[in-house]
Amino acid sequence: MVNFSRIATQSHPKEKEFLVKKLIVGTIVTLVVSGLTWPGMAKAATTLKTYMGQSVQVKLGDIFNSTSIHNFASEGVGIVRENVEYTDPNTSETSTVYSSSRRIDTMLDDDYISNFSVTWKTNCQASASQCIWALNSWYALGGHYKMTISLETDYTEPDSTEVPVAVQAANLISLTSKQSIIYPFKDNYRDGISGRIKGVTPNGFPLKTRGITVTASINGKVVGTTKSATSGNFNLVVPPDASGNLTLDSGILHKKTYGVPSTLVSKTPVVSAKKTSITSIKLSAPAIVYPSKDGFQDSATIGIRTFTSVGKAVKSSGKLTVTQGKKIILSKKFKGSPYKSFTWNGKVNGQIVPGKYLVTTTIKGGQGQPLTAKRNISVSPKKLKTVTVNETYGAYNSFYDDQGDSYDPVSHDGQYGARFYSSGDPDTMLLTIAVPKSPSAKKWRISFNNYSAYGFFTADPCSSEDCLSDHLSVGSTTFTDGDSGTKWTPWTYAGQGSDTAYFMIGSTDWASLYVDTFTIQYSKTVLR
View 1 (tube, helix red, strand yellow):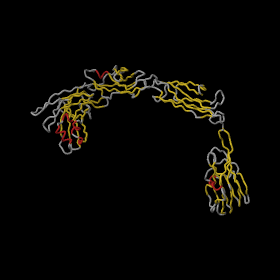
View 2: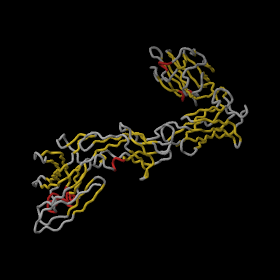
View 3: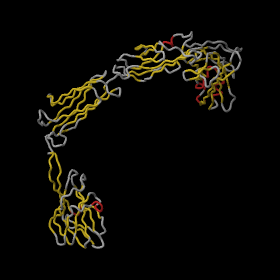
């Protein structure tokens, strides 16, 4: 425990008796002293005592009187400076060990300024003669120091006071853990805590670390103990059912070594112990299967993916069933893996039995309770069949685009019909016609219904809506002067996968072509 005592105070006829109140919070020492009655004079200094590596803290209201606090607070913005010096008792040489400054808003009233704390962690900012380099930092050696605290504003002279600090010799200890989270369940994955303890004597010489006790506790109850090796490394085993925040501690911090106490200069290691368990299951399967062996969703692929608290696979066992009512159709057992896949042919004893089936999987792993996931699958007797479709559309409404330079090439004629004009050489007539079709259609053809040709025309299928670039000469159909009636174009495979059949009508004659309707014929595959 850190203690400090009152050594001396200045005397004055009007001085009130003041009270020194000692508050110990962790390793921080707080000094509280009541005010003096005369203005402009700092309060009497009281020596603060601490150990190497620990901190001392003092509130401004404990060392400055109310007048100083008020004057500082009334100026808006001020700077609090801290300077720690050491005077060698043998040579009387004074050196600065530590200094800092902080700008604060002083408009927050006198109480805020009075409660503002200045802290020295007994660290050094440079390699001063009174400091040692240990455990990756500079620390002040044992001795008597003078901490000068100043209040400064842009409009007032600095108001300073001195606080004596007695730093007592102590061993400096660093205790660290390699893990922040462990899963104590015995599966060889982060089951325990590994770490290291290092220490130096008050003069900076290494401490022997072999055999130092390190413990882990939850809510003050020790659940694991080990001893460090010569290197300072340790491995700490905790019970598999441990859960919560584990606080690491070392026995060297609670006894004197080389006649002095020890100070922990690292953060107290806290390791979170968590359960090893399966947290959720993702079960995937098709909504419906068609087991007729026609190449379309003939069987069901059932996937099982597990998610765990450790982010990796854990030892587990599970079972998969496919049931219809109370009847078990399929049953499979399996052992741990983040992903499993099963195939069900969709049949019952080799027969297609239409209806709904339930897929269920239950998995147990780690320390968690068994988890279950379910999914429905329907079985259908339908199979793929190829059917021929005929769909008819008005010729005028089927006109899509004019990509030629023929004059006024399309006009409405009759209820559905259209008359397509070619203004002749040197003009070229090129019209794109579009009618819907199924994207699954592999081939299609067009019927020109009730047509009359006056001049020469050709009709070519197109692979896209850009017939100027994508028309195909294979499958071309010609219409000569005086032709009439109904004519089918050859079958074409153009534009597979598209939901539209595009074809072009073209001519360089001075001519016209009347068409009443277009019929598209195509084959598509359907489930029936």
